[in-house]
Length: 248
Image 1 (cartoon, one colour):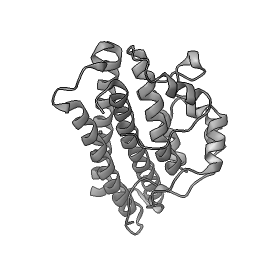
Image 2 (cartoon, rainbow, N blue to C red):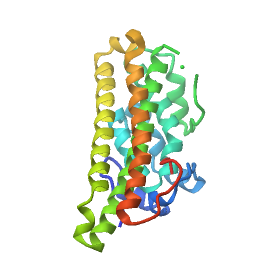
Image 3 (cartoon, one colour):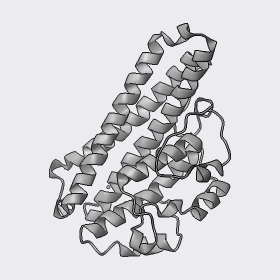
Image 4 (cartoon, rainbow, N blue to C red):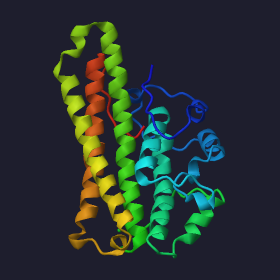
């Protein structure tokens, strides 16, 4: 059985989504399914980052990333497609919290149920900084979740085949890569949330754009690492190694 991520979403919401094939069997990028969107919209999923006073859940980047890991373990293509929406909503919410009112229209549209799925355009204002922080972290986390799910499924399959199957280098390498991916993503999320908590520092320019570079690097490491973990999961389970990417 697939290993479920734990987090802020009620189990009943995820159970309403159609089951998917094991992650390592789906190398394609997938996409947003209309049936999934209807379930998630009805369940308030599009308003996770919306401030509570506007009718949302008021979740931070850390908590939305957790929710996206839950969703990606169940419907990875849908989770990946919603990263941009959460990035707009979360970036706007963080901008508003820092005193920037120019992004309020985005929050109003989210409150009305609008779905943001179009990439925005490399700015250096508060909203742009927030959108990048959310998007890059969520992209990395969805890749991590797909890889984690593939690894857990492969380990369970290997365990059923005999304990000796787990005493092999692919298991150790995959586990180390997952730990590294998750550690870097958690670090950049925590760093962004410290800036949000500081308020005025959120609006300051990033010296040398070091924070942005770290965010891009963490996403890159997660996406490359996820592909390698999926390949290792196939070896662990005794399957053919898939070609493609972990976006699934």
